[in-house]
Image (cartoon, rainbow, N blue to C red):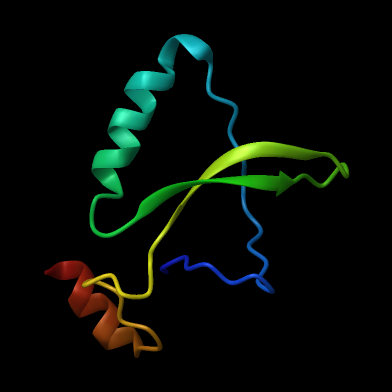
Amino acid sequence: MTLIQDQAGVCDGIAYLIEADIVESTFEHLDYREKNGYERYQETLKLRDGRAVPGLVYLAPVDNFAFLGEASLADIASQIIE
């Protein structure tokens, strides 16, 4: 699944609080893992308890070379294998 910006979109997931002493190494790892066209963005996260908190998300621009758009499961699997 590729997350792209969509002002009307909603993405449910899990938000993790990263302890201050491991922030640098955590983002070093995440930036490497998400290197295939994802960019880090600061967004407001809306938690289930109603709070809105600052957070970071990785999103892919739609002009990303690895973005398939609407694709079949077979095409997605092929992209992942490459």
